[in-house]
Image (cartoon, rainbow, N blue to C red; front, side, top):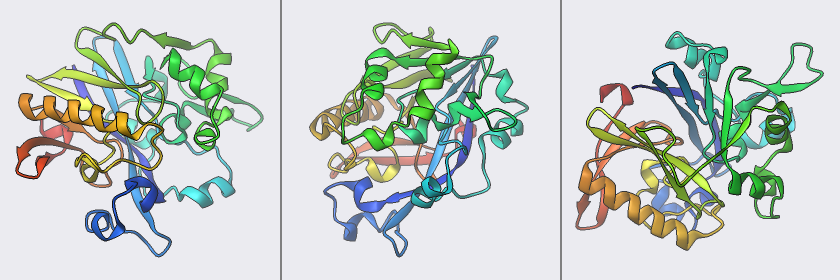
Length: 279
């Protein structure tokens, strides 16, 4: 198995929403906000090469939305999905599987793009199977008012219409070295990859622990639909990571790709940070 970190760009979200009940006087020390209280966040995806399969976990927000949309979220930076794939010698047509942890726009927006004359939406990965938890799919296509703005039909429905969608069986491993952890705090049925890699486990954190700044248990996003569930899920993952020296891979941390954690007097905290390539 080979793993590659795929950066698709940065975007901005309100710092208060990202840290929930934690006061700005605390969270701004690690995640400084701009004049509009917005913090910059990565959209870091994971590419897995295993045999003849090339699996992309999440794909950022894409670039098909209008100026009004980007006026809210401020897509920025020099990284794109295409450039990051090309860095390792890959193209979107090489992807055999697109694994979607969940269907919020910043995780699945790159799934769909316009055709060459911008008259029709189509799947961006024409040779790939798209994988999603069925429970989460139903949750996303029938959104509740709280999450509706995060589930964009243009990101979701063309996947189904293409015939490329398959549902995950969360009771089984995706592959022998690719286990699944279902979390229901952030949204219904988010699925996190746990990968056996080089004598460790690489845990793709998605929105359960979006950044190093979210490792302390009370640091739960205001976006989460069941924050008490998130607390329990974080506690379980962090305990496993501390006891078994797991590597946590962060989708949204603006600078830190990976870290290990350790038990301290203040609870479980980051131990060592590093880039995925250093494993």
